[in-house]
Length: 304
Image (cartoon, rainbow, N blue to C red; front, side, top):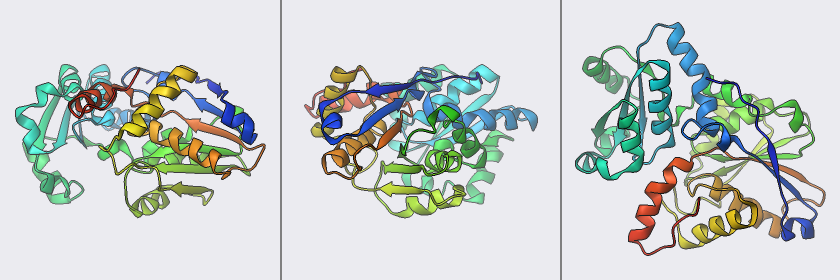
């Protein structure tokens, strides 16, 4: 995995000037087209561990549009691993060719195994892992979303010495590993602010399991109904934002986070002179598939 240096891009918009709040976006999406943002960070030390332990296969879990599935497939190919993706939803097995994310994963060598949504809910059970080991042989297990202790270690490297001047560091939250890593790495007097991408207070427990500090908060009002929920209002916001800033956003994570930040700015949640750093965690590969869904619903498509 290549070492990278990422820039913090300043955002200049009237509402920020009016409220005397500054915003920069750390362009982690520019690390790589497929292994971008937090997926690069989460895979870095897991790949090294799999190599050191002599594994030749990586197995992980994800939904049909999972950035983690796409990133694992590509990283596995680059580093010489066979990859297996356990995909939620047996109904997808007959039409996976229509899904850009899954086509990409297969093109990079991933073998797909589709399981029922009920079976998928038991993805953390030892019995399921044993059954998968019988079917596929020995493998290095990556959890859904890639979050484990090594992933958190990688996400700690998102924050650098150059980020010490920011008061608040924002991140989208899926499984909690990225926010935990950021929290662990923050400088004194900084706060991590997470924006949940799905419903449920259980995320707080997930974050606590990885975070070694209490310098974080979770905003749960900007999930728009959950992972696959992308209403027209969010699409219009994302498209307006790229036209104003030239920064593309994905609708599942960063789009919801940036929407939330600006809503909080409007509501005077942040004190004047607050300096905000928002982490762009990538995920842009999933936009193509989401646009197909939006088209069917007669909702405007997302601009990249």
